[in-house]
Image (tube, rainbow, N blue to C red):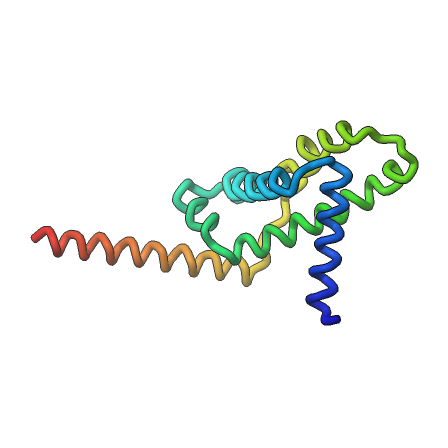
Amino acid sequence: MTYIDKEMKANRQLLDDILHLMSMSEDTYYWLRVDGGTAYLREVLLLDQWSVDQLRGYAGFWAWWNQQWINRDREFLNEFDHAMTAGKSETNQIREFYINEYNTMDAMRERPYQAALNDSYDHMIRQLIKGSQREKLNEYVKR
């Protein structure tokens, strides 16, 4: 088994553990992650709407974001491991903490590493250039 296979298996187990702990569907979890990523772009990086839209469509951002979310989930499970094994916490309490407090923007203050930022800027600049070229072409066609 390769390193990547091991990581994928470990990440799948992590996801299964989170879903089981929260009594949450994979679909609900997916949208928590997507909504969290969008909120991160707006509230932590303080990007304008155009930039948010560009990065939401950029796979490089999501690769980085998903890794951050996986890291947070590992940390979350480690924090609550003793509560789960002792049966001291109710599922609803844990889910509420996870959704409302644990993955808030205060907890997600990590910044993308420089290569990810450079990639995302490159992507946005290319989109600007495409848009500018499209505008020029439209002006030319109108003449």
